[in-house]
Each structure stands twice: as structure tokens, then as C-alpha cells.
Image (cartoon, rainbow, N blue to C red; front, side):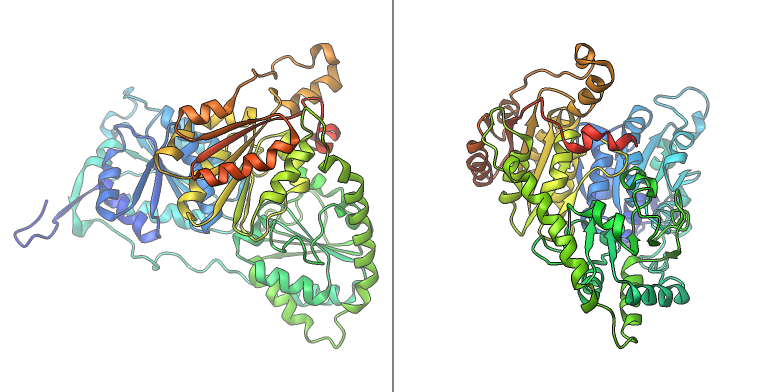
Length: 562
């Protein structure tokens, strides 16, 4: 409603949502429509916020997660009540374990029909509370924008994560006087989250580094979250420290950097006298901390106080922003006449020898001409195909485990994987988010055939929104990571129960939906097919038939369960 002068006198809940999103800098929502939430769309149209509509709410939540990882800004998904919200739960849970900041807004039946059995009524807040940093119901239209800003604030508090708001339909559709609605101003409802860590701990770590003869550092997800790339790179180069990277930390150093190591981590963690873990927890990926030498001094740096020292004792813990902490430590080491860099030359050479030995052992598999195609040959071809501008996305079990040992992004922020929840189906949503946020970048995604099947129908969304990418399916017609475990535990005669898939020609699926597709059965065909997909300018799927009897070392060791 407007007054005689053409100004708004009232505003609806949906339009308050849009104004609050705009204040946070949100430029897109990922959504699947529902009658409970359409007033938000109307508000987004007025505020200039793009609406990308998908075919499944899980995709919307995963896309919001991917958007946050790529941009460093919170993502946003909007889903309807009941099954719309429960469909998004997997995406929320994945973001929770991966520490991705996002807001999921769910519809809800009218407050006036509370507990009456309204359409799609479920206790969303009770269900989502344990897998989010903040979950609440908006109780009044005047509070809509206020609670949206509160949800974003909590999402970015400490280690980031997802927040959830349910907004009852009568709250969303109602209009209130503009002057009675609290709409927090951009930049005025959040403090800086860049904590610097305890100054005494910074000085202590600087001393440990300078005195160390065999240090090593693991640069984890939070190095990218806090955009600490330059600080981390300067620290390891100045002090001559070997660096290993996982998760979003991959790409912090380019593959050719002499301080970049990948295959000698076990040797390093068994022989280092100082191990610094930056922004990654002692979870299953780290063997719960048991893979670190008991003789080493262990330092952990993390945004979350609750993560530091969890599952393993440490010698020094620093809670803070990785960028601020690492730059402060480097500055503190400058007070020493000798920072120890020259003395670590022998240690660096020792690790490089271990690295080269592992590479030489693997080399024949990377160039294997075997048919069916060896997975190592596939991921080696993908690694060679990547350019400086290629963002790599991995979505799958065994085949993506292979890629984690071979594929090396050329720059920071150019690697996305599900994260510690191990969620399959993130690939297409991550492609969607990445191509929206960075249309200038080439996106290359590797899927297991099982993983692609979970959210693959949104390939059509990529076609509809003209989001070209190069997709590769490592097709072994099986959930092979699970298949191996069953064979090992129960024998070959029971090894294929519940994990065997059909022989699907995914190239035809891509073409049916308006994209580009090819089938590849010989290793020499991989590179040319990838190049043709790039040249097509379309969303693409190169369906590569790989050997179902070959498994990644991590799969054979069942490291995910140890």
C-alpha cells in the first residue's frame, strides 16, 4: 500500500525478507516453489535478487552451501513447508559439518492454524536445531527482517555454519506499517569476526617455529574460509616449512611450489618435531589425531574453541581467524635473527624424496592403457586438462577418492568437495552455485555414477540457466566404495547386494536435456572428449567407463571408518 505521495505505508513479510537479504548482500536465492513462500519471490523481484528455481530442495540447500564456499558470503535457500523443508535437511547437515555459512528459510502453516494439522505442518525448528547454529520461528511480521539479520549473525559466529528460519504463511503474507518493522541496516548489525588469537600464544608459536628443525603444517578448510591464502603462503615460504592441504585449503600453494607436498603426509606426520594444524578438526580424515607423531609438538589453530584439542591432546591451541593468526605469527618470527629456514633444507629434501618415490610408484597407473579404464588414468587426464581458471568439483565415493590423490587445483578456492559429512549428490548444485557466482571460471566436475544419480535431474536447471561446465562420470555401474567393503567382509558371493547399478549411458541423458554428451571406453579417448566438451559451450557429461574391480587405496584400507 502507498500513501498520497507515492511512498509505501505498509510492507509484507515476504518483502521484509527480501530487504533483509539485500542488506546482507545476498544477490541470489536457490529455491523450489511452494504456496507458503511465494511472497518472498515477489519481494526478491522488487529488490533485484535473482531466483534460481531447482527440481529438488536438497539441490537448493547444496547450492547455497556451494555459493558460500565460492564467494565467502552467506548463501540462501528458500523452501516450502513440510517435505520442502525436510528435503533440504541433507544440504543443511552437509553445510553444518563443512562449516559453510548459509540461511535456509522454510515455509510453515499459518500461526492461526498452529497444531490444527495444516497443510505440510511439521516441527521444523525441532528437527533442524541440532544440525544448525540457529533455528527459530518468526512470531510476527514486524520481526521478519530482524530475525533474518539475527540468523545471519549467528551463522557467522565463530566457525561458520547454517541457520534456519521458518516463517508461518500468515506472518509472511501479512502487511505491517513500514515504521513498525525493524529492518537492520547493512553493516550495522554484525561485528568483525576476525579474532587474532592470544598474543602470548602467537609469540609461543613463533618461537616454536623458529626453533623447529622438522616442522610441517596442514592448511585446512578455514584457510580458504578466512581467505588466509597469502598469509599462509608467505609463512611457509619465509620459514621454509613443508605444507599439506586438504578440503578448501587445496590450492593455497600452486602444484609447482617447492613447499607444496601431497603424497608424503604420513612420512611428515611421523617424523616432524612440530606439527601445525590450521582450520581442520581431528576427525576421521585425521585419524582422530592418532596419525600424528606422539613425539611432535602439536599446535592447533581454529575458529572454534570447541574444536581445539578435541579427540587429541595438543601442546598449544589458538582460537582465531587463520589469516590474522598466521600473519601475526610470521611478524613475530621477524624478531629473531635466524628464523631457522636455512637449517630446514635437509628436512625439505627428505620429504621431497618421499614425495618423488610415491609419484614414481604411481606413475604407471596414471598412464595405464588398460581397458576398462583405470581410475588413476581418468583422474590424471582430468588433472592435465585443468587450466589456471578451472574450478574442480568432486562428487562421489571411490572415484573421487582417487582424484583427491592426483587432481591439484592451480589456485585457491578452485576445489570443492562434500566435506566431512561425505554427502553424495553435491556436484550438480555446486556447479550451479559456482557458475552463478563465477561465470568467468571454467567448472570441471567429476561424479561417481551413483553420486550423479542423486541430484542429476538438475542438469536441466544448468541448461535452462545457460551454465556450461565439463562434467565427467566415472562409471563403474556400482557404489564401489561400499561394494569393496562388502566383498572384504562377507565374500564375493554377497559383495554386490544393494550396491550394484545399471549400465546407464549418461551421455544420452545429457543430450536429452539439451546438453553435450559422449561415451568413452578407451583411455586415449578421454582427453579429446574433454576438449570437445569444453568447445561445446554447453553443460556436458562425458561418461567414462572405468574398471569396477579397481579400488582406491583409501577404500581398500577403509580409512573412512577408522
